Amino acid sequence: MITCRTKPLLATIPSFVLSLFLSGPALAGGYFEVEPGVDLYYEDHGSGLPIVLVPGWTFTTDVFEHQIEAFAGTHRVISFDPRSQGRSTVTLEGNNYVTQGADLAKLLDHLKVEKPVLVGWSFGCLATWEFVKTRSVEAAAAHMCIDLSPTPMTGRDGDWTEGSIADISGLFDGVQTARGHREAIHWYADEVMIEQDYTPELARWIEDQSTQSPPWVAAAYLAAGNFSNYLVTAKEIDAKIPSAFVVADHWSDTARKYLAKQTPNSEVHAFGGHMMFWEYPNRFNRVLAGFIARIE
Image (cartoon, rainbow, N blue to C red; front, side, top):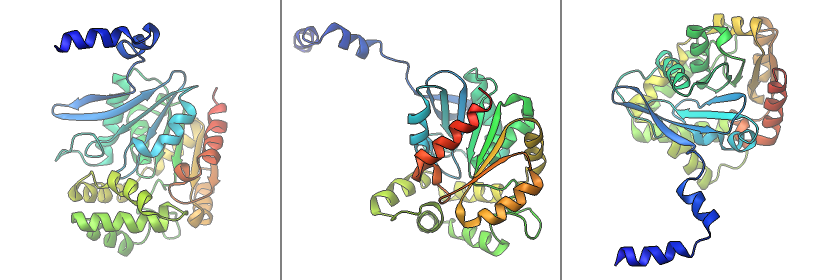
């Protein structure tokens, strides 16, 4: 019965439409086993100069929806869910940015990507800096960091940092439980990440991404990120390849002074909140397009 009903149905579909279903374009999403038992979800769109987008703490490729849409027609755009985030495997080991940078290197080797434009958001910058640290500055065509200091909590007094030890320890304590994690990301998104009204629909979209990582993963990444120090690597990037920082308005004065001293050759753009690339995509995409034009 199934065979008899299916054949006439297929016969009614125009051949050019049927060919799209049967052959179609290459799948944009896939999984790569970065080590035994640990699969990374990734997306690979378009062709041309590769742009690699790395999401921040506990987030997923979904945050880059506007960049993927804008650039995939002219460039090869790659993003991924880091281990224990989003659709990637939750694992007990490697929930730190040294491992995340190594995972990124393995994924790009698997995809045969050479000299990409690296774009990290927030703690995703730690993974891109780690990639450069271990592979060399010459392994990248350019580097953009969205709203993170190379010294998140390890800078000196007056430096651009994530906050005081008391601030960070309070956040760390808060994410130890599932409820605490959701409440923490709700507060942070409303107060720091997003300037528009934090509607229930927007809250669910953001919080559902973050809370796909268990609380112990969130806490491990939070600690690893804040204790990181990639100033030497950021300085080397600044000296050798095109470099840019896009920072949120709320700490732009501090960030600009710090970057003028530490990475004087880097572009610095300031607007919006911590997630300005999503909230103001047209403005951000113009900045990214202008930055990429420097190397094309």
